Length: 319
Image 1 (cartoon, helix red, strand yellow):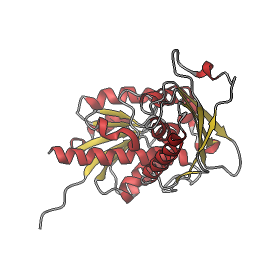
Image 2: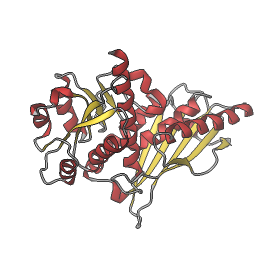
Image 3: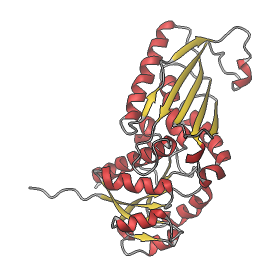
Image 4: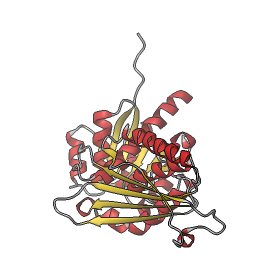
């Protein structure tokens, strides 16, 4: 009987909510990954304390502390759940040691990756970026539509509970909108993209809700059925790794009213759209560490673990 394949060791930088949820997902549910280290800068953080209780090696000295750890050489993949600015410094230090980086910040040093859309295209990239929570929720839908018909313009609105937006999220709001809009184009396939984020102050907190509005060139009614089918398949693909991801109602496809000035939204030379596709989503968190209303954070950590699983399998195939 052959010995089981050893799991790929990973480290998590950032002992806040996102980093701690990543650790819990790896420890409880991963078949291919093992926690090699939890890294923070606050010795009193709950994430580091929880990691110690769970037997995970820890350091409160940031990336320098990680590099100095005895098991550092065995770690192959590093999740960075800090901030865009911090990731720039972290990536510079870790790339020199050949570590694969999964970036959960808006730094976007490496290519954007949305697991249900393009993970297989970037398995050899040393640093991949997980876009944003809104991007992970909505870009698959834009991609599903653009696989069927041209999308001259796509706009997404991500509404998240204010309580689920920590200091890092609030500090990176500008990067959120810019990064998501860019990924709507480069990954989703829209000619022009726009992103809006709403921090909903409602109490009790509401779960994440996302709206995708796409202007499309689809004069043929048969294409409308194809769009609905493509969106349905994509929702199922995302829900396979984010169980709380779902459509709120049927996909709506309506003609663009005559005289509506949609040309103001289009890139120069774009074909005039014939219809608007409206898709309404919600994301309920799995509540592994974060509360269930924090679907915006859960979809990021779930997607990041999905990418790490795929990278780990890829590394085993190469060996």
